[in-house]
Amino acid sequence: MKIHIKNGRLIDPRNGVDANHDVFIAAGKIVAIGKTASAFTANRTIDASGMIVCPGLVDLAARLREPGFEYMATLESEMEAAIAGGVTSLACPPDTDPPLDEPGLVEMLKFRARNLNQAHVYPVGALTEGLNGLRLTEMAELRDAGCVAFSQAEAPLTDNQVLFYALQYAATFGFPVWLRPQDPTLARNGVAHDGQVATRLGLPAIPACAETVALSTILLLARETGARVHLARLSSAEGVDMVRQAKALNLPVTCDVGIHHAHLSEMDVGYFDPNCYLTPPLRSQRDRDALRRALADGTVDALCSDHTPVDEDAKQLPFAEAEAGATGLELLLPLTLKWAEESGASLAQGLAKITSEAARILGIDAGHLSPGGAADICIFDPERYWKIEPAALKSQGKNTPFLGIEVRGKVRYTLVDGLVVYEAK
Image (tube, rainbow, N blue to C red; front, top):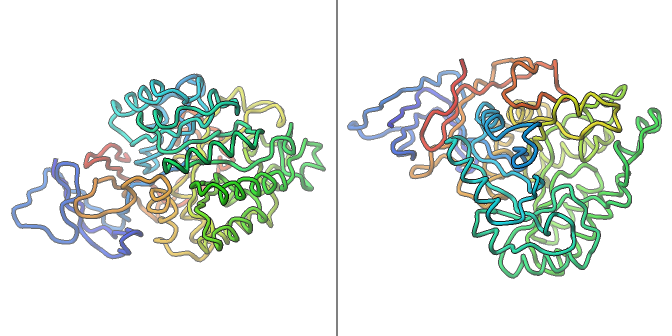
C-alpha cells in the first residue's frame, strides 16, 4: 500500500520539524518527506489540510485488562481505544491476573495483540514472582519473550533487600526498572491526598511523604547500583524536586506524570466523585502546579494516560470502596494539548512528551517521522472540539473525571506500519 499524505502541518519533535510537508509511505515505511520521485504512484491520498501530522503517540501506561480482568475491558476494546486516540505504541503494566511473570504469558499477550493488527504492545514484566515482592522473576527470559522493562505496578515491595538485588541484577544486564514511589505503610488504607478535602470528607488519607520516603530509597539504591530507573506517575511537588536534584547529579533516572494529575487536584474530588479516585491520589493545587512546571522545564520527561478501565459497578460505590483508576487512552492527546496551551509550551514541546520522549524511555524506535522509519502516524484536527461522554469513547471503561467536558483536538486518522487502522467518521 502506497499512501500520500498531503497539505498537512508536519510536527516531528525528535527531528525538530514543524512545517508543511507531504509524507510518502510505501511497504509500511516512510519513503520520503517533502518531495519524492515522480515515479511514486499512491494507492491512496489523504488530504490533511488544516490538520497536524505527527508521530503516532507512545503511551507509557495503559492497562489492557487481559488476561484476567476481561469483565472490565478486553484487548479488542482497548486496542480500538488506542488507535482512536492516535496511540500506536503502548506499554502495559504487569498487574494482570495472573501477573506477567512468565514468558508464556508475555508471548500470549504479544501474539493476541499482533493478530489485531493495531497498536504495538510492549509488555512490562513483573519484577517479582506473582508481584508478591519476595522472589525475583527470571528477567532475562521475560526480556527474551518481549518485555521492555520490569515493574511492580501498584503492588508493594516492602523488602529493600529484594529491591536492592533487583536493581543490581537489572544493572548487570542493562534492564530498565520502572517503579511507582509509594511507601505502602504510610499509604495503608488511604484513598485521598492528606489535605483539606480528605479532612472535610472524612476520607482515609495518603500523605505526600508516602511518595518522597519511597523515592529517597529508590534514588539511593539507584545511585548504589547504577540501575536505570524510571519513576512512574509522580504526584507531589517534593517528589519532583527530588528528581530534579537526582538528575543534576547525573543519576540514570527518568520520570512521567499521569495526564489526569497534570490537570486535576484534590478539589476535583468534590463530594465523593469516584471518578476522581485515582492512584496515586489527586494532590493539592500546589502539587499539580509543580507537576505542570516540571513538565515544561523538562524535569518530568513524559506524560502517560495511566489508562485504567473499570467496570461501572466497581465505580458506582462509596468513594473509599470504589475501584481506583480512570480511562485515558483517548484523552491523552487532547489533554496534552490542553496542558501545552495553558503552560505556554509549543505544540512540538507538548507532542514530544507523548511521542519522542516516551519512546526514548521505552527504548523503542518510534515517536518520530524519519525516512526509512516505520509509518506509525497520527493525523489530528487541532481545532476540532468534542465532548467527552460515554458514547464518544471506544474503551469499555467509561470512567473519567472529564465526563461532560469539551476538549480540543480530535484524531482523524491513525496509521500503523503504513496501514490506516483508524479513520474518524
